Length: 239
Image (cartoon, rainbow, N blue to C red; front, top):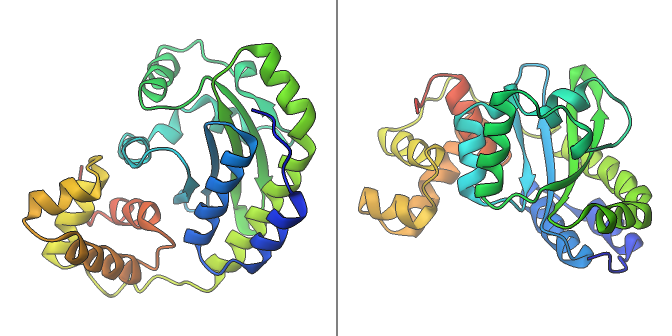
């Protein structure tokens, strides 16, 4: 943990991105360069829709969305009332629902240390950029002391790029999902990985990818997680 990061290169790569998949790749590279478990960018817009990019497992992302954990997540609730970065351990985890959520997160590979940066954009947009790891408190404090300022800068670059990408994509609300697209998106929302979905539907992973991309296009979604969230919010899939 706490390796040196080429900040200028990361910012240049962010400027060159054209899609959310590129942001996901940069998040993974940043995670590896820092030697931590996860980097997460999470957006919640004024309508309550959420999407983002994360190095969390697909199963945890789908579970988080399916269970509407954003409604009880102490980090989301705490950061919404703040403008400065926060350490997860300073959040209120005393409620039973919060403790259950934390246990579920840890069981799905989320680290017990977190540093989340709240970001506010236009038209009610609210986002979080998070570094996540598992280590003792002293090591985590040293990591934040070394990299905290750079993470704040990177967080705002991520958000700026996400806003640019989002402005280019608009949902085509008049187009409904096909039965196969509904099946695929439902299984993904339930936490199945792509290989499991393809097996369950008796199709190849290539064919599954076609269904997912088609659903994303119809929903005007930036990535699969965003498509699942939009499909659920519009009642197109039920989990």
